[in-house]
Length: 205
Image (cartoon, rainbow, N blue to C red; front, top):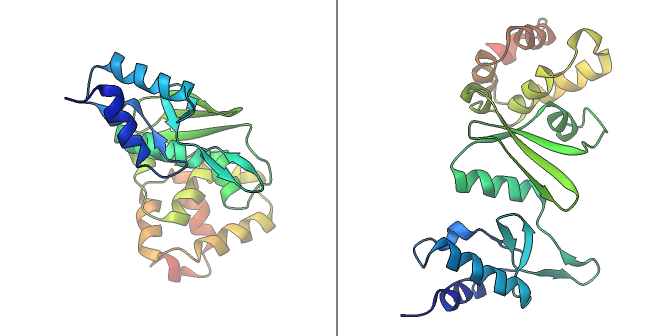
């Protein structure tokens, strides 16, 4: 039978540059200690890189930018997939993704129906904040982000320009998905969106 280190090395050699690696990928090949020792040796010999605690990746180089590290969103999505939980951006990040804010968050916060956790990708802190299943079960790609953003916004102080931007964004959403997501939204957010379409009810029929 092949040694744990040899088996893991062969599996990693087949991965694409920039692929994320977790110790749990190799469960069944050996003990947790043996797996971690194998990964540690591969970091030392340059075969893989350590991104943060418990997460590694295969080196990837760009001719101009040099060595690249995996993106934060990719890492967060992979962690959620591994842990079989759902994650969605928090309000500040949702605002930024929708183009409603130019402020880049100093740390990224995702809401999750799984356990809370923190980790770093480079100098950026990422946090999974536990929330109710309802907040991560919305269907619309646009409407879910809009509702998440509005949940953490002072709606009374929002200017007309921003309201019009939000209305235009929601007009791109599937009406059925918007209706579904509104049914899971807080009352104040539901009322705010309904008022945006009070003279154009086609989206909310």
